[in-house]
Image 1 (cartoon, one colour):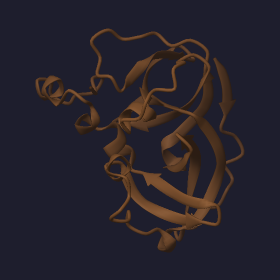
Image 2 (spheres, rainbow, N blue to C red):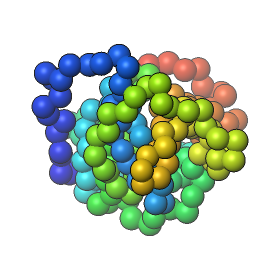
Image 3 (cartoon, rainbow, N blue to C red):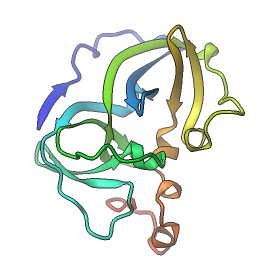
Image 4 (tube, one colour):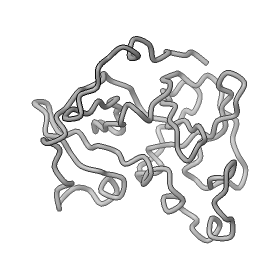
Length: 175
């Protein structure tokens, strides 16, 4: 696994009127992940499949000795899978006290955007996207859909809701 550590952000002053997003590409669409949720960006060289897991679970990764669940953002969005799991870009995020890897098609730059300019998702936004969208930013080169990490990784996003209903939410188990 090739790690691209997040460095140089420690001394950056935070402006409460601005929000920084790590941009990712999925099926040609630009999405933004709030930078405070992102810990790592890396290339998954090996991913272990998980039998009987919901289809959104791409597999398990070893990240510096920790087992991390990889979630395919393509599958969350009900898109056709890109095929390969090894060699995919993965964004390490924190949710519910645990680390997850969001498998994406590509990772772009960090954008600093005015919070006041974020708009609610448009009514005609693809329903697959609106379920995980916190809002949108109109950029010169298109639309940036801001991902609500809780909506994207929450139990409601897993395909088999009946399987998750049987398990209480607790530390260490997030279906």
